[in-house]
Amino acid sequence: MKKEILYNKKNRLDLEKELKNETFSRVTCSFYRYILIEKPELARDQLYRDWSDLKIFGRIYIANEGINAQLSCPEKNWDLFIKTMNSRDFLKDVSLKKAIQDGASFYKLVIKIKDEIVNYNIGKDEFDMNQVGKHLTPKEFNDKLEENNTLVVDMRNYYESEVGQFENAIIPDVDTSRELLPEVKNLLNGHEKDEILLYCTGGIRCEKASSYLIKSGFSNVNQLKGGIIQYAHDVRTKGLDSKFRGKNFVFDARMGERITNDIVGKCHQCGNPADHHLDCGNEACHILFIQCDKCYKKYDGCCTKECKDFASLPIEEQRILRKDPKKVVSQTRYSSRVKPKLARIN
Image (tube, rainbow, N blue to C red; front, side):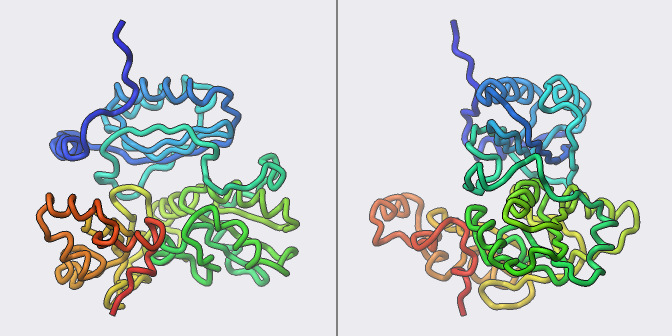
């Protein structure tokens, strides 16, 4: 009996070419749900079968504690996608957030089993998902921003906040989710009785973060329902005044969705206004950084002149040099893949 293949076997170039040649439109959306999934492996295989048949692409994490998904569905298959969702008890009637700017967001389907659906790496005694912060609508969130003794906290990583943020927000200087909660707790020390407003991309990071803060002694914790994605929809459809400025960073090929025309970021190379993230064009580097159009032309989409020179070498020569760590040019030799501040050069 032929073994069923529940993962993609094609290479990236072929997949991107197929995506480019599609003749139909796609809808990008995201959702999450904290719910007990007793057999994540079984759920993973079931969803892979369902969604592969519907040509759905995306990145989905499943754990015992729930599911976190960002995906791209062919518009013509949207109703069938909803049908697959409602056929699974742990997904039935889940709240879906559609992107405000569609595009080529994903080129393949990846569903992974994880220990956590957000990698906070905190102990089970440090949170209780039965106690989370009050969910505020975008309108309610705006109203709270106007009150005294209210603190608004960005529950995302530093590089996300660089291109867009709420006015007067507290911005934790961290690069990974694992660093975030202890840093936020430290920044809020002494404000245990004040009203706290949390926000993130789609709401999932605030869900567990609010529970963590409540468990840590903060008594008045709120969170933006649906995150920046839902906030942007209400700004566009309900005429809500946007107190978020700039772009909402997203974890797919689009890199961001514009909420307002404000450019709050700076090019990491020349310091001029810019808010376009990209991966360094040097395949050995791939550091994430912000680059303006002028520097893009100057450095061919690379984060340094050294990376540009390395990327210009013949592929075979690059492959040979990569075997010797002393000869590889890469910002990521010194830190994690995402470390935008390292890319700033004069």
